Amino acid sequence: MAVTNVGVLKYHVSDKKWMSDVSTAELSNTAYDILKVLGKDADFLYDTIDSYIKDANNAGKSELVEMWQTIKKDRQKHVHMLKEALEKEIHG
Image (cartoon, rainbow, N blue to C red; front, side):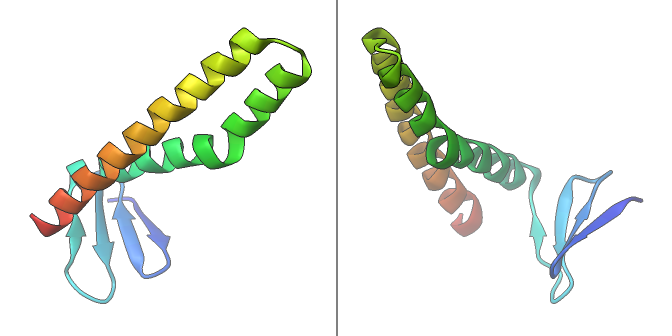
């Protein structure tokens, strides 16, 4: 079984489960899926989208600026939904 160490957590590749070295806590597949998408959306929101908006603005393409701003708002809604879903996964 392949295991990847990440700090005090281990990810069992074949089982798609996170395990803690400190305890027997596991991260379910559904919680993992939520975290993965949450991370990707957060990267897009906080590292990428503003540069796309700036590029479109600098190019004088107001339609693209509006499109990127709409996508940004949608992703912010998605992040909120994912955070709520993760809380339910963790706390039941």
